[in-house]
Image 1 (tube, rainbow, N blue to C red):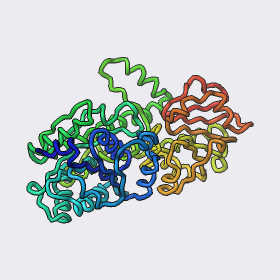
Image 2: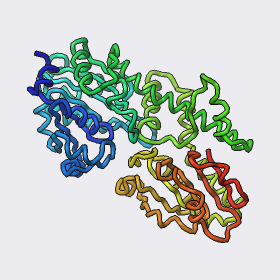
Image 3: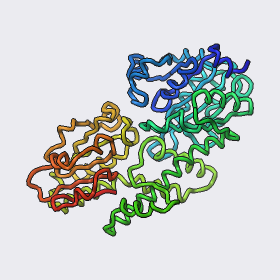
Image 4: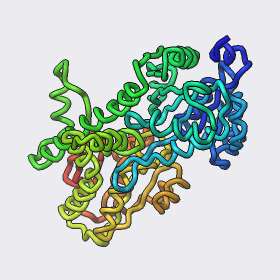
Amino acid sequence: MGLYEKIVSGEEKLSLVGLGYVGMPIAVAFARKIKVIGYDLNAHKIDLYKSGVDPTREVGDEVIKNTTVEFTADEKKLQEAKFHIVAVPTPVNDDHTPDLTPVEGASRILGRNLTKGSIVVFESTVYPGVTEDVCVPILEKESGLKCGVDFKIGYSPERINPGDKVHRLETITKIVSGMDEETLDEVAKVYELVVEAGVYRAESIKVAEAAKVIENSQRDINIAFMNELSIIFNKMGIDTRAVLAAAGTKWNFLKFFPGLVGGHCIGVDPYYLTYKAEQMGYHSQIILAGRRINDDMGRYVAENIVKNLIKADVAVKTAKVAIMGFTFKENCPDTRNTKVIDIVKELREYGIEPVIVDETADAEEAKHLYGVELSDRSAVKDVDALVIAVAHKEFEGFKKEDIDACFKDGNAKKVLVDVKGILDRNTYQGEDYIYWRL
C-alpha cells in the first residue's frame, strides 16, 4: 500500500507547515477528505484558529469553527504525519535579495521531526534550485535521514490569490512535481483529492519552481508597462483608463491596468528570478526595469497629491490628507509589503502626516510592521485631499455626497486622488474638484 492509500484510509496524516493566507486554506481543504495537522510557530495565531477565528479572512470564522484540522504550535506533532506541505512566505531583504530565512527555518523544524517514509512538498515561491540545493541539505542534517532513500521531496507552487473568492485552491490547476516518477505520482494523487481543476505534472522540481516565479514576473512586467503609460499620458493630459478602454476593444489586447504593486508575490517574485540569473552571470534588463517602475509608483502618487494641492491653492505643510485603504490589495487584510506606505513616507517628506483609514486591514499588523495607527472613518473630515488608495468593495459604493462630506468647507477646490479609478471620473470633473488617477 502506497502513502496515498494510507492517507486516504486514515492510517497516515498530512501536515501543513505555515498557516497563513496560503497554508490555512490548504489545510482546511484537505481536512474535508483526510486527517490534517496544521502547524504554525505563531502560538497566538494557533489560539485564534482553535477559538474559531480566521485572522486571514480567507475562509471565514464559521469554516474554522467546523474544520477538523488539528491546529498546533507544538512541532513534535509533525512526527505524526507522513505527507508534509511547507507553505511559508519567501520575502526579500531591503536590498531586494531573497530572504530564505522562513523556508530555511521551516525546513529545520520539519527536519527535526521527519520520519522515514515521508514526502515533503514545498509550496513557497523560490528561484529554481532552492528546494533541492537549500532545503534538502537542511532536512537531511536535522533528521539524520537521506533524501531519496528515507524520504522524498516534491514541489507544488501555491497559486492562491488572497482575497479572491473565485480563484481558489480547488478551482486553479495545480502544478505538481517530484524528485522521481514514484514521488510525482504520489504527490499528484494527494493533491487531486482537493483540486477539482486537476493537476499538471511538471517534468522536474526546477521546472515547477521556474514556472511559478515567471507567472508573477510576467504580471509585474505588464503592470509596469501600464504604469509607464500612465506617467506618459498624465504628462499629455490624457486619461489612461480612457485609452485602455479604447485599446481593449481589440481581441488580443491584454487587459492590465496601472496600480501599486505590493504584496508577497508580484512585488517580490521577480527579484528571486533576477537574483538567480545574476548568480549565473546574466543581468536582467526587462524584469528589473519593470521592478524599478513599479517600486517607484508610491512616490509618484504622492508627488501628484502635492502638485494638485498646490493647484488647489492649499498650503502643503498644513494640508490635511486622508488615505482610504492601506492593505496591499483590495478586500484582503494583509498589509505586508503594501506600497501605500510609500505614499505615506513621501507625504511625510513634505511635512504631511496623513490620516489613514482601512477597516479591512489588520490594524495590529500595520502598527507592528510600519508604526502606523489606523483611524476610524469618522476621522476623515475637513480634509484638503482625499486619497482612495485601495479598491475595497466598501469604497466602490461611495456616492458624491459621501465624498463631499469629507472635505473642508471654504476650499476653492477639493483634491480627490482615485488611485485605482474606482469612481466615476465624470462625476468629479466639475469646478469644485481636482480629480486625478493613475
